[in-house]
Length: 460
Image 1: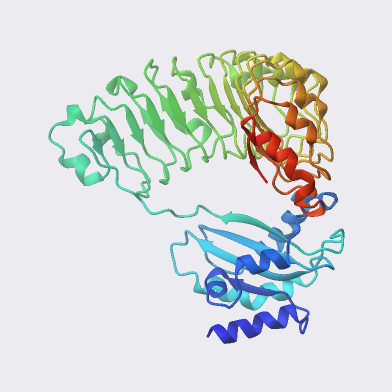
Image 2: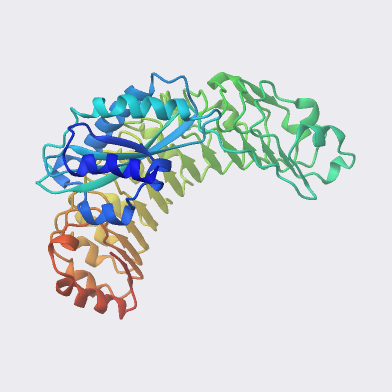
């Protein structure tokens, strides 16, 4: 079997056929090739000028179009593509995870149809070099095995919830991943001392909780259901601190959140139909952690500034080309995540976020930094990986409290020697920059040794 697979691989590298080879990770493991060998044959990284995100998306579009012929849903497909000097794919290795049913049909579909569909894909700015890159996407909701929570004060099954005698000692009720279509109120109200109610990953479309019957409830997890904006109701309370509504059917901030007078964390990521207005942020002054991950947002209304206690703002995987000015009005913000957007610049007055400690801005289109970022006195982690930096921004050298810097996957042609001046830097990430393959190790090793003498951990 190994010899047969190996022979098929030889067809690729001998250029005896024009079609790319598409193999599953299982078949790859049974072949004579290794990832180490391929890493030597395809040493490059994605050229910056090609636009990493755009051609990654174009490849995913082809794969999705191929697998759409399959009836399978609820899985994750990841892949590694090996691209030759002409910008064409030689080999694509894929894996399928989380499928409820056998993936044999999908594998056959990919093996039979994807090679022909990939013939037209080409990276025109490959620079005449071989390289590889990886990606992934999901279809539906990938299934993960349910783990039954257990403990002296926890219940993780419907049967245990029905038969539990000492109901007063139960603090956690975990009825997640049970494909519930209706909320089992009779079971929930049996436990008046509940602090955690986990109903995530069911098929609930509505929920109406009488919080007076759950006076100690602090954490309500409703993510990955189908609850609409006007289908969630919570009576007025002062106990709930965490409300997770990630991936539901919301179109705005739910009024139920305003009934929770001491709510601290509100997670609304994955609700892609959000249409926010200034009114959305009313009466949420106690919230200090707001998650809007993957909501396809391109802007935020000025009403955001009403969240005066906000410390953590997650805007990962949206469509921002610039950050709204309202973000810089959040004077207590300490953690800001704006990675995986389309930002070409950070706000000129970002220095207004005087308490900012952590800034994740990787996977954007940044090539410079605002001058006023040098005024930060508390920023200790700055992640600018996978942007368009060809030189190290001089502003970084003025951020004296910086402890961790990530410049991975940029376009640095030479080692950023000025970083050796940051004697307090504890971690530095430089993987995937051109200088690592264009310069000899002897050229940049002295700088690394100097950094490590501080000591700074250097990842390259």
